Length: 366
Image 1 (cartoon, helix red, strand yellow):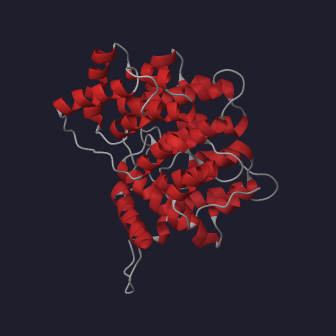
Image 2 (cartoon, rainbow, N blue to C red):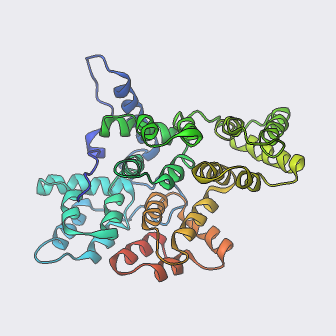
Image 3 (spheres, rainbow, N blue to C red):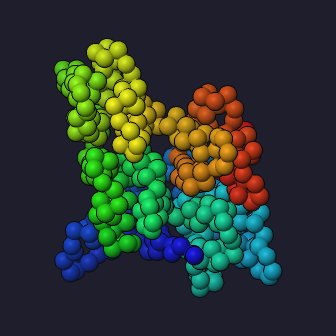
C-alpha cells in the first residue's frame, strides 16, 4: 500500500496569504505555523540548513533545474538510477529540496514525491520520501503513521514529542490539523490511555517554560515532591512527575535532578525505572534524557535500533532523516563516546543496498 504524501510545499505558501474572510482557529494556527517555518528556514533564497551541527549542509552552486534533469534521467526507461537519486537528495538541505520539488512540478507537471514513490520501494523509498518533506510535515506524517491502523507505535510518539521545542510542536499540531482534518491531540487520545496519554497531551500543549531561570527554592521543593510521590511512598503519584517534568525549563530541571539525587540517594532515571513501567516509564525517561543531553538520547535510540538481531528500521530512518541537518555531527560524537564504535560502522553492518548507501551519506562518513 502506498502511503499518501502530505501536500505541503514551500511553493504553497510564499507567505501566509492575505484573506478577506474571517479565519477559524485551525486556519490561524496554520498561518502561525507558516510564519514559524519562515523564521526557521529564514530567507529561502539562502537555502541554508535548519541547524548548524548537521552532516547535510547547503550545496554550493545549487541549480534546481540541473537537479531536476538528473532526477528525470534517473527515472527514465527500465529501472531507476538510485545512485543519482542519492547524490541529489542526500546532499541538499530541506529548503533546497523544496526548490527541486517546485522546479520538477514546473518542468514535468507532476509531483516529484509521487514519481519517486512509484519508482522506489522498501526502506530506501521511506528515506527518500522523508527527505522531501519539511521538518514539521515529516514529524506530523510520522506521528500519523504511528497512530493509524492496528496498534500504535508508542516509540514514535515518545521520540518526537519528548524531543521537540514548543515552537516545533505548535507547528506540527497546525500541519497535522490541516493535512489530516483532525487534531493530533484527538488522535493521540483515541489511541492511548491512562497516565501515558496525559503526559503526551501535556507535551502537545507546547507549554514548557523555555526560559533559563532557576528558582532554587522551587527546585528543592520539586525534588522533594517527586521523591514523596515515588520512592518515599507505597505506590506512585505520577501526576507530580508530570507536573514537574513536562512544565519546568531545562536549567531548572537539571537543578531538580541534582537535588533529587541528594534527597533520595538515587538518580532520577533509576527511580523512574523502579517506580514505573511500560510506555509511561519510556516517556518519562525520554523527557529526562532529552533535558540532560538530547544528542545522547538520539545516539542511544539509534544504538538500540540496530543492536542484536534485526533492525528497528522505523526508528533508524526517523532519526537519520529528522536530525541530518540539525545535530547529526553531535549525535555521531555521542554515539562514539557511549559505545566505542562509530555510527557509520553500525549502519554499514546492519543495513544493505541503496538503503545503506543513503543512510551512510546522511551519516556523513566515519
